[in-house]
Length: 121
Image (cartoon, rainbow, N blue to C red; front, side):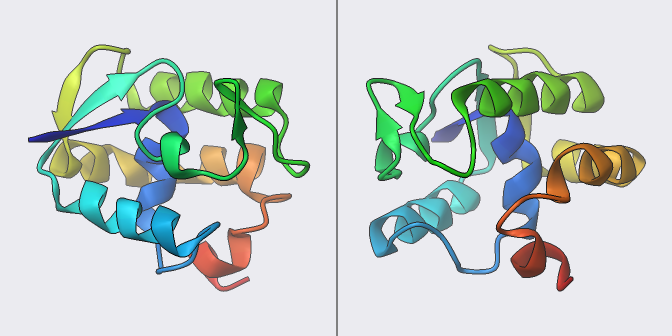
């Protein structure tokens, strides 16, 4: 069984600490993290389907615009050197993460509401 995830979730889930939008969303994250393989998607994924902000296939969160989410996805895939449709595993992602994390944090973590959860700052 494989997870189906969009670009930015490939990075952000590495810092998951048990917090999220709802209990249902958090349970789904734990399910996803137990799966060995990940199929990379270009748009909403199985986590998005549990997110209360998904509206008509788009992010309707006031904190994150649909354009920002798509930019995060594109940049995550560029930095990780992955493409939609690829199947990877968590070890491959984790191996590439140290080389791209500073650039990712500079671009996307500064204004993120989960920054304190992920990095304690």
